[in-house]
Length: 139
Ligand SMILES: [Zn+2]
Ligand SMILES: [Zn+2]
Image (cartoon, rainbow, N blue to C red; front, side):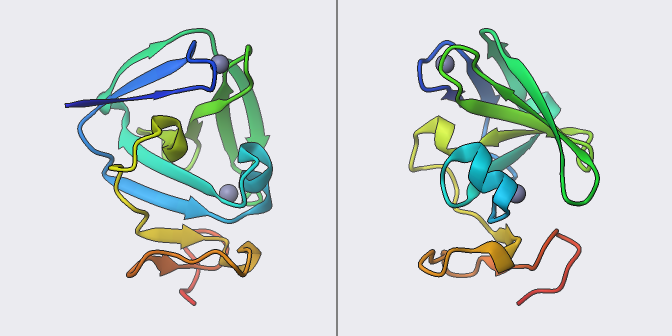
């Protein structure tokens, strides 16, 4: 089984095999601004699960609050950010959960930067909530 994520105009697509081994939320301000939503919802996969990337993509590298880089690839035609690579996960590709437009994508099991969470956001049962990055204590 494959899953295909696409940008808003459909010209940039990423096709992944199987299900994402990890789905997480990030409430940080950078993710809020990148996505235009109030949190980022991210699926993480081994790079080997990526079967195809089609279409033109532009790169925006940002330096996270941790000081490490995150390379975000977005469609130059419609501006949707679709996938990224992060210094902290060199063997993985991250695909924005919403770009699959598929409610069967697994729910998140971990949320980070909870201190930036909008108070009306409710997380699924059992989702771990951490302050700041993944190395921080749970709340
Ligand atoms: Zn597009
Ligand atoms: Zn974030």
